[in-house]
Length: 502
Image (tube, rainbow, N blue to C red; front, side, top):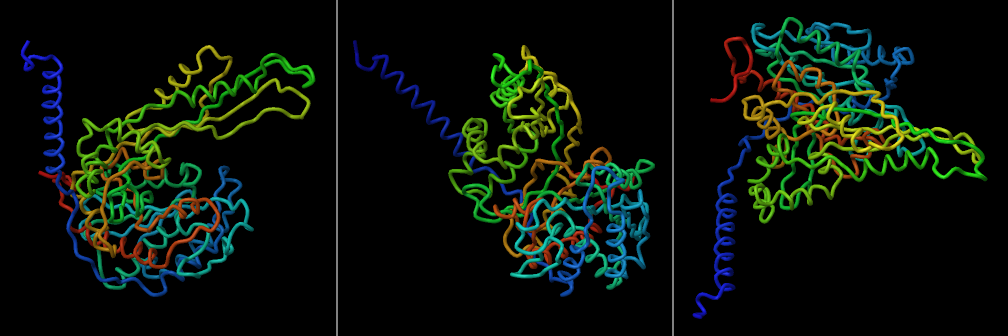
């Protein structure tokens, strides 16, 4: 037999041709990705030198959140608004101010053309409690400026946004500026506990009568460095959606008795198996939806081989999932997460508990629903003597549009106020904010504040030593100033709203 007909040779030739074809496709697709960034020029800063001091003074006011409205220190919230009126006289002398459910505020800056869809700038003034003040380098309500930072509870979450918006408008009013579109400033007082009396009520007022805002901007994304291998520039992630929320109570019953003669299987052991099953059966990672849009924006900005990895997800999806699953932050971006958050069992060392209870929290991708997650839990735990009871839930909000003038305006504004070359990409916020109350009324709800958020800073949000760099806070103020100016350039549809491309 001729060696040319040796089966192994033909297989090798065929394999080589296939591999060569795949590599050719990979090379072509990698070379064809085009940047989705917006070219900009920096703008001159107009931020008052006293702005950081005003933020620091606001951080001394203990606007601590409580789930029960009756437990709130209402006097502290009223003190905050009195301080805001004193610190920003032009805002309070020009804008209409409405009290919403007592402790939230809606400021309305009437635009030159009231027929146009309005802009909503959001923030919240409530802060989470301090667990251990001794863990703080500087007092949590001391209002200190030191080491180039403003220190205090709320510096990042979220009084920098609230004060930054007011600073920006104060400057613009003093300069005689009136926006083309009406601007609403919505300051909620209970975002940290769901925003039902603050953020939701504010949204209902703004959208009453079918009003669809042209733009809504809230906290959420920030600027990070070293987020992905192959990305040398800082990355500004703009949240275009948040996750849904479901907390489920799992309860296991079993025989009690004295610990000296334990039963074969206790309620704690049954509950432990339930938690282990949920851990062993996570929701699958999904590279679609917001994740797909984020990769499309990132791929052109990455060096090889990461550019090839992201540009050829039809081939590299398994590898990409493995890479993203290595970090908690990126893992949360591509799947519905599952985590036990509370455990309760037993009353005494030598008594076997008759009941054990756990609460498991799920953060739900926009492509899934609360009912799907509930069904998954029941299916995984089938056959176990465990009661499953949903106790609190919020469906995932709608995803805002990306290929629009509104999103490009966000990109342009970020580029104008940041000193470095910044890559801007959409992303999925792993939690939720009060902006979710606008998601059914506008397709341009974006979550972003332009401060630098490093690995050490993440633990400061809701943790000890919360702080914001003075330079970052100046950028925050300039961001809102430029954003308001840029909204004048948003195109309009016949009905007054923002129009899509094309």
